Length: 274
Image (cartoon, rainbow, N blue to C red):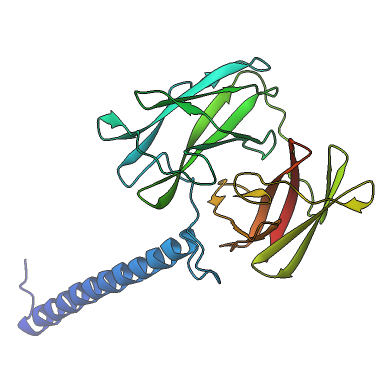
């Protein structure tokens, strides 16, 4: 076989070195770009940049910061009242030291994946750290269970899925509206600025004053459509005005709970952000 001239061999050797250097540089650029993108994603995921220093979105994971939500009742029968049991585990033991927040040590939110069937429960804890609450879910499907609590002064929300037997007839999210009606009450939503939500409640065309519920004039839960991210909402004063920051564009379902004449009522709204 004829030998390759020395000049040609040197030329190809130089090309090979340049190619290797370019590939390595490309890898460095891609890596740094990926880290930058991850930083942006984490910032968006954590709800950074809130006008009122809002807490990050929560409820996207079953385990976080060394704590894990163990759902001891993973499936319920449709239309049957049953005891839902769970625990918050830290390592190899159940956690028992919870702070009191909004007058309770544990808030349990149950809602179907299409954001229907909302329930807000206050379970009881046994000496071994297991919690229990009676619940009845009339519709089949997959529900999201949120354990919302405060420990060591830090608010946390862990979540997992609960199955209810049968074929689910999922409903589309209702269109955005500033008016909701429930149990003979009309609730109007007003937005004075992007982070403040004010609710006015009337019955028989007369405005009513709510009674204290969970330490405030009302309680508001906001969930994001799709991943059901749980937004922390701050009540202002003793009325039904709340501050929150919507971390991303999209649709959110707002569940306002208020107490009047000794009964708790729930009004639901769809809010679209752009």
